[in-house]
Each structure stands twice: as C-alpha cells, then as structure tokens.
Amino acid sequence: MKLELDIKPLKNWFPNYTKPLLIAGPCSAESEEQMLNTAKQVAAFYPNSVFRAGIWKPRTRPNTFEGIGDIGLKWMQTVKKETGLLTATEVANAEHVEKCLKHGIDILWIGARSTVNPFSVQDIADALKGADIPVFVKNPIFPDLQLWAGALERINNSGIKKIAAIHRGFHSYDNGPFRNSPKWELAIELKTACPELPVICDPSHIGGTPELIPYLAQKAMDMDMDGLMIETHFNPISALSDAKQQITPIELKKIIDGLNIRTSSIASIELQTKLVELRSIINKIDNDLLELLAKRMAVSAKIGEYKRSNNVTVLQVSHWRNLIDKSILNANQLGLPEDFIKAVYHLIHDESIRRQTEIMNNPGNHKST
Image 1 (cartoon, rainbow, N blue to C red):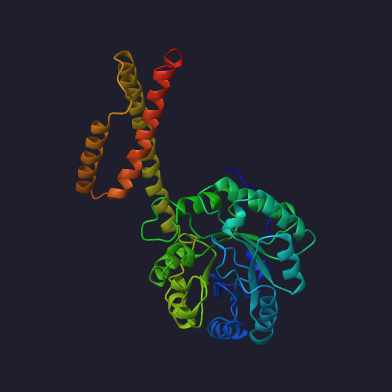
Image 2: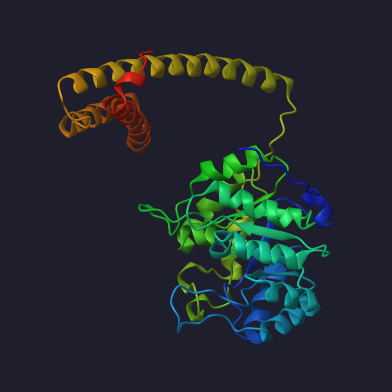
C-alpha cells in the first residue's frame, strides 16, 4: 500500500515533546470536579502530557450515557487554565469540530466508529479547512487498512499537516485475551507505507483491562510507536463509561515510569556490521522459503488436476486435520509457537484451495508451474 501524506514532524507540534507522547484522562467527561481532580494528578506527574476526555460518546445502544455534551468543553477550558495541560477530545461531525475550535481544544481525534464512514470523515475534513490543529485518526473497528489510510488522506487533504494515527485494536471473531485484537501487523504496514506518520497506541481499548496495559504499552514502545493514549480516572470504579479499563493517575505513573524506551537508531559500527550479517542470512532463508512455497503450490495444483479428473471434492477435511495435527507436533519439537504455525498453514491451505478450485472451474485456463 502506498500512502503519501504532507506531515509536519511531531517534535514541531509540541515544543517539549519527549517519547512517548502521553495522552491521559477519563473516557468521558462526567463532572468538572472529576475532570479537575484527574487532570491535576496527571499534571503533577507529567506536566507535558495531553489531557483527554470524551465530550460526546457514541454508544452502540441508546439510553446509555452518551457524554455530558457541550458543557464539557467549558470544563476542558478550566482544566487547561488551572493545569497548563493541552486538551484533546473526539469529534464525530462538523458541528463537533466547530464547537471544539471555538472553545480552544488543542487536539482532535476521530474515533473508530467514524473512521469506517468516509462521508463522516469528509464532513469533518471540510469543517477543518483553514484550521491549524493536530488531528489523530483511530483505526476503524474492523481490520481495513484502506479505510484507515483513506481517513488520514481526507484529513490531510483538508490542509491539516499535524496528523497522526491511533492504533486502538480491531474487532475480531477471536480477540483472545484482549478487548480488541491488536493486529500489530496492520499498524506496522501503515507505518511502513508512510514512515513519517506518527502512530499513537491506545492500550486501554486494546486490552480492556488495567492488567494488560503495562504489557501493551511496552510492546508499543518496542514497536517504535510515538506515544500512548491511556484512559485515566481519579476513581475508575465510579466511571460512567469503560470503568473496567481505566486506571488511576498513580497507576499511570507506575506504568510510564516502568517503560523501557529503546532507540530506533543504530550508531555502533560493530552492531551495524553484525545486523547486516544476520539479515543477509535471513534474506537467503527467505528466498529458500519462497522457492519451497512455489514448489508446494505446483504440487498442490497437480493434486487439483487429479481431483478434477476423478471428480473428487477440493476440500478433504480429514487430511487437512491430520496435516495440522502433524505440523503442530513437529513445530512443538522445533520450539515454534502453535498459534504461529496454525496461522501460517491456514494461509498456505487457503491458497492451495483457491488454486485447486480454479482448476476445477476453469480447467482449460490452468497452466502448471
């Protein structure tokens, strides 16, 4: 995927920027007392951080807490005045943008529910024309890299050059221990397509529980992400939304202070030499893997021809089950994780099925390789 964006460097947005950029605050603005109490504690630990709070909260079902509304913008002004923290909130339409700009909100973000809708993103982009404000774009709910990239492009095309992505995880049929599956590979692909794009990780929404936040925050730093957005509430148990995933400012301090921030630059000549040597070995192994995969697919195609000639179904469930069981057994002996091997074999099997199905349906167009 190709993604070309006109972006100002993150260090030019915030004069006192140090990695990670920390964005902390409650899921929702609930009261002026809640906002100030939380913000003052966060500011005491991290005076250069950004205070976040949801003013308008899009919910799946009606008749639940959908945000405090416009009054929360005045509370944000009070937070900024009394703590000096920059402020950030989510916008879902042009009206939200106009109200935030009027009240001096410093940073806007587009939520996962809005990113999935190009019409909504374009309305927001149109409302931003002429503004000079950082805008963060969360990944869409489902793993669709094109939607994520498209939303970033729409905002950038409106003239916004202070733009970043927020990785908050994706809904999946199997999220494992997480509220939203991290799918780190999609964030990596986005960063690879546009290396200058800052990427912020939201471990609160990925994990869905405080216990997973330290692990996810460190993982994000190890993946060379630029910042963290962590939901922080002075009394999480009383929160009106996402109470189970918010942490206290004290817990936030323990997590941030415990991070190991590694460098992405390689200054040592000796280290560079060793990495080049090891990467050349990997390159050869990768080439061997590609050749073996090509041979495997050629054999798979030949099997497809025999199945067609003998009127046999493409999918042989018992054989597939035996193949997986045997591969997992061998993988365990080689020290390879079971989930990894399953994922690899599912991809290989899907391609084999695709090729054999093509042979079944279009026998004359098939050419053995």
